[in-house]
Image (cartoon, rainbow, N blue to C red; front, top):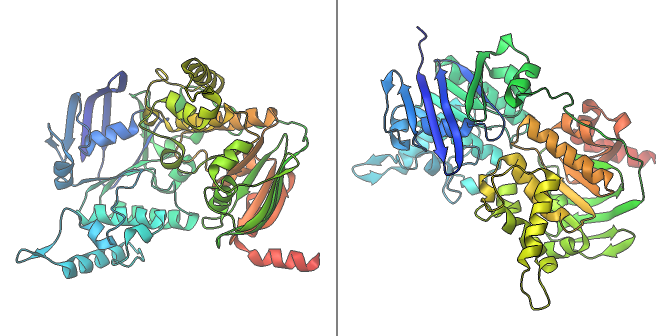
Length: 505
């Protein structure tokens, strides 16, 4: 009999109108990295929230270190050595690193909280993990990647034996991902069990021992990673063959839609100039901190421009706030769709209607429910948004369908340029293909598409032209025929090359 540290059998879980898990079995061995895989909505996070005590199971059994647990809750899970690092980080941004690590477990001396002891212990844990962060640093001042590392340190401070990581690399640079993998190997060598949830399947080969696949809330298969292929994993995840990972369409380039001249905004957007034509998708590549997101926010009016000119369809436009950009038809699907792109507690109808009230109200300021319903249903149908009905909260949708709602509200008003910032972050392989097809649909319709991505295969697979940024500047523009990963990385890391090119010219 296998020596499992976690055994879950016959797990069922339903929410109002949704069956999330049906008769799912799961197990984990000590010193094992298990990849839990599946599309958005497959039930991965639900299963792990049951294991960590966030959700209560409807039926089934849960054993941790051989002990059956009937009424698991977060405190009991922590006491039993189970910790979870959620995809959406659970930090108190106004507190320091050491205060976050010991939140709820504060060290005391004679009844008085001992900051010195907590700082010393936090320093020791961070040093063991080779994480260079000052324990006195306020967490809100840290990058998302460093906050992720603090979450890991927080989990290990509880002496966890089972660590659940939900999309841990979604906001990390390649160097930070490499550092994280070293930490995972170290924890594995110590005999800890790690459950790794990720849609970045290319990462699995570096750390994973075994994979388990869920689909539509049901267990599909478990197998050693060395005995399978990524193609087989993808087919099992989606229940069908995906023949083209990056669908590309060809369309003749039309007239110039957007021209940006010498755009400056803060210290991360400096002298940015580029253009977009009908019938092309323009990708923006670069490392984290290159100024890509800041550029999109300045174009959309979310951050103030210091200087620069924006010309749309041959006419100069002034954008001082998002309302100006929306009015002119230049719109943004932001990097953090839940925080900046959706009202997750409102319905799909409300989310689509809110930025389009000017199109839905009569001269008396009253909203036409007939127009609102028509706009919503047309958007849902044209983008093939999968949902029970248009009254469900946007927060209940999968990542891919949320992204479609973000884009759909803009398409309802015949926008001219759609900017996507990390459009496929945190969504599964099949949903990514749907987003690419959506971009192609915009391209065919003559709408300008500009998109930021940290995944070079995605940039190379979908773009017609690529803008490379480094240190807040454009260092190179590449036609897709001359672009490779090596060439992009060269210009994403060597700003000096841009200076040399300018001198030669």
